[in-house]
Image (cartoon, rainbow, N blue to C red; front, side):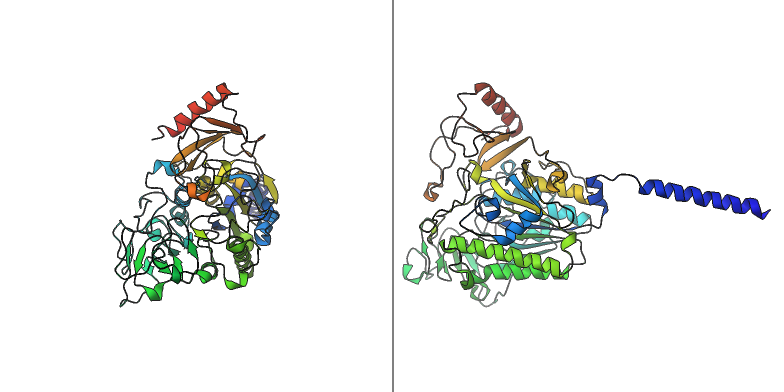
Length: 513
């Protein structure tokens, strides 16, 4: 009687072993493999005004960025990676929301007192990752507005980063050249003395407060266009500020300060998974390298802060390695818009540029519809998961939302973000087919190897920066594969192609008003 029972048990065991063996032999796609492993930490290192030609991994010869180069050498170095806009606020809006900035008329360069431009009900990159159990952190530049437009800086400022998905946020409200010149942590001004309250006004000065225009003798950096108002640390800013002396930042220590906060965040949350948006301030004006970096580039403060930023990247990556999480962390490195030399201060950026070309082989720069305005250094790095390669695939920072959603298994819809995880991982060259690019409310259209710039008569509103805006009274059409420098307008020679692109652009973009 026992023999049949034992035979039945042995047979069932053999069947289960066979099933398990067959399942173990099934092939696994790249996407499934990335999604099924332990949830990776995700870090976006976002620089400010860094050009395509400002990195030696992108063929810069006059400046050296060994730590950024190491990311490029160990990951995917994209040659056609784009920001959504040629200015900062719109690009940051697109990166975090997956929505084209031209769809939101408030997604423009903002004053320090602007209200939050991300709807708190809107899907964002940190919100999406929180759904999958991620702790989410911001360290660095915000510049997407705060509050509802009437801000009391002496109380908790809300809504802000915390209300759009960040569990932790340590940031400056706008830019280094705008007031308020203080750090905020989860909506509260850091080191604020309640007996010295902060007052901010972008229209008129406070009685008795010195300004760069009226008190040049107090300045350590000479202002040029528009940066002639309240003076902090010997530098005049955009906007007027009174009070808050104990809370004011030290400009020369800013890079170290943000680095320390980013490192501390990693150490606290190393058990993961975490998402860190590390938004560095370099090389935006005012360029204030720490004394140990002064003179290191030979190109004045702009070159020096790029060298400083590269050092920060290296120190941050050392922290990931020291904490034992480098092999489970996807790092994405890029910049918000193209380069600019003279952007409000006289700091020798023009005089000491030498043979360096911040835009590389591209035409234009910050504020421009030409390629240098939006084509960025763009690198994805994941030790042991991404193989070193160079990719010509077309992708945009707007696509990070859908691509990272695919990585963690949280599908999204209702945005302009395109899922390109395989491209980001370096296993596919099939990027976007088309992309709308923006520069200060003007838009252009990339489709395949062609780019079309509609007519925009008149000079650029940013003519002081001495960068070609891309404005022209007629259509412009360029074939980028053969003419990356955009020297040959083919609109007249290829009227059929121009008409085809205009139609496709109008379908996607709609009215340009």
